[in-house]
Image 1 (spheres, rainbow, N blue to C red):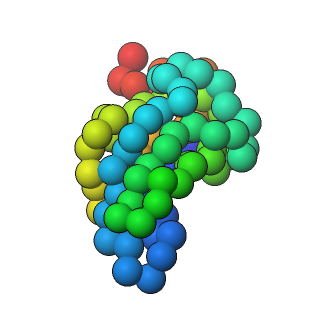
Image 2 (tube, rainbow, N blue to C red):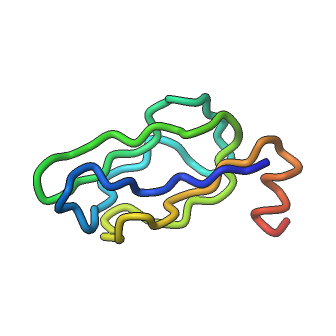
Length: 89
C-alpha cells in the first residue's frame, strides 16, 4: 500500500514551506527515515524523511514551489507494480 509524503507543521505558526531540493527521483527506492528532500520555512530549513519504505512513484511538488502545511509532496509505492499504477503506466 502506498504512503503519502506530507508537508508537516514543524512550528506553531508554520503555514507553508518551500521545497528547496529533492534528494530522490521518481523510480528511486527509499527506506523509511531516509533523507528525501529539504524544505525551507520562514525560520529554518528542514530535512524531510521518507515516512515508509518503497519506490518513489510520483513527485507532486517541484523544487522552489511553496505549498501549505498538509500538502502531499510525493507518493511512495510499496512495489514496482503499484508505482506503475500510480504513474498511470
